Amino acid sequence: LIDFLIENNYAFEVDWKAYYTEVKTGIEGLFQKKGISIILEQDEDLYDLDAEIFFPKINQLLFNTGFSIINLDIDSDSYVITLAIVRCESKITLIDRFERFFC
Image (cartoon, rainbow, N blue to C red; front, side, top):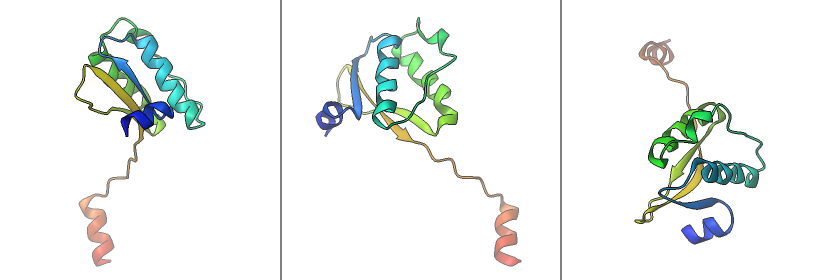
């Protein structure tokens, strides 16, 4: 399955010590595959960081896009990265539930 995802550009693999430039190119390729035009912006501080630090920061940058990157664990010293759709459902308070049930 992992090979299929990589070969068909639904995921990409990078070494654990990959530079952000390589990862950013891979992420932009995933968006292009989906026909989505999202460019990572305000990412200047990520270029000098290690992968284990910049990956969570990428998800912070993607927060408002409805997407997140995830690492598919292949028991290796590399990362297999793909996109996931993040659905944020509105929170319903206890009062809202009470009103719906009893009113």
